[in-house]
Image (cartoon, rainbow, N blue to C red):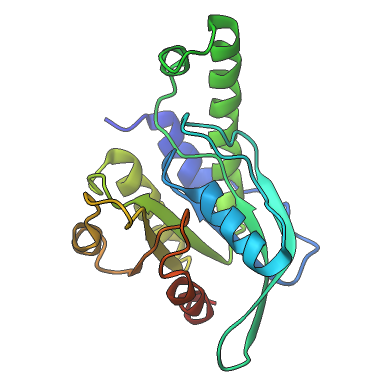
Length: 211
């Protein structure tokens, strides 16, 4: 069962870090290791010429909110879209320090990371109420009907936040975009490989439709 603590936070916390800003806030949300930070880096490399976030094969590498201001993208028709890109820690209903130990991290560091990751989840949730639109980055090789995915989608739908689903890792044989489309038919789904840039132009075009 989804942890009631996180469920309440998702529904009730109100926080306004962007109160004085007028342009669009675009959040990257999703479970750990879906490819949020890889996508954030791809966007920033394409349009700013620099990376944004650290990436790792270890879950919860991003444990703090990362923001890149004034990302300006253009499409083939000459339209421009400017937004603050917000890369958030992966949402999880339970974070166990033993997960990090299994990846070869010592116990002291593992406990520190678990504590930071839990704090990061709470911060991600706090920022949710301030997003103008959200890209949910899902690993297309995994079952989309996870408790975390359903919790994230349910809360986004309750807030009426425009959502685009980036079905990531389509370069892998196990990727199944149709499963994600079937799970969340209310949202547009675009298949991408953030790592290799596959279909990234389609993704950018969908951002214009989202905002």
